[in-house]
Amino acid sequence: MAQSLDKQLAAAKQRNITFSQLVLETEEKETGVPAEEIKKKLAARLLVMRQARREGREKPLFSRSGLVAGGAYAYANCGKRIVGGLFSEVVATALAVAEENACMGKIVAAPTAGSCGILPAVLLPVAEAYALTDADLVQGLACAAGVGLVIESLATLSGAEGGCQAECGAASAMAAGALVELRGGEVQQIGHAVAFALKNVLGLVCDPVEGLVEIPCIKRNVLGAVNALSAAEMALAGLRSALSADEVIKTMGQVGKALPESLRETSRGGLALAYRKLKRQ
Ligand code: SF4
Image (tube, rainbow, N blue to C red):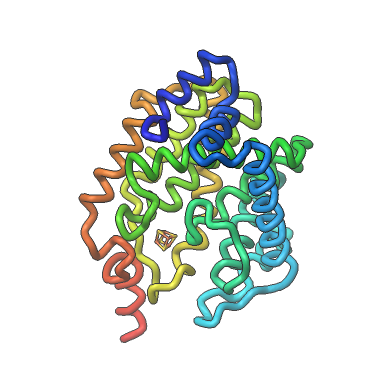
């Protein structure tokens, strides 16, 4: 079933259950681990996400390379906002968790360490804004995991294989799908949100400066989180993707294969190359 999100969503709709319920049921069947145990594990991941957010916000973080220098703290404590509110909280959380990762703190790779800020950045602030419980968030994580499993199966979750679209793009799609379920969307709208989120970052390359998950990775977590919010809102409003989630996911995999090796985590192209040239001057 992890081979098709379209089919899973159709099955959930037919049985009148949520996508997260279907994901938990399937996982229980395939692994033999009871759904309640899986939920406990997800709840434990939620605590790690919260802790990473706190660590990244409460004090300025500095990475060994010097490329991270208190950006998340500066953003969280800056009074100048354009949008503010939930949006700024999402940005602040994405920065905080991604910086915590760059500074060797504990994070949840969701689906990868490089993209670890995206799911917490949307789930935690949205939960606060809409009084969602931890049980709701566990449901959101199950939904996101279901989307991630399909992306892994039909394409890839690896920047080395498919570029950043496969890491931050996948995390963004997972978050968008979770948001739709958590905000009471129809099960099919999850597929549209996933498709929107992934389409918007198709072709995004992986070009980490100095081979470190710092530049451009941290800000790409912000991009992925904000993209997830807009993708979920469009789906909730009834906008429909002309291409199904499965089709977009498969296309992402093909685009990833077509990317030159220099733009797939080798740090030989893109911003990594530009930075090397800059340092030589
Ligand atoms: S640029 Fe590469 S290393 Fe950085 S988050 Fe994206 S996929 Fe991961």
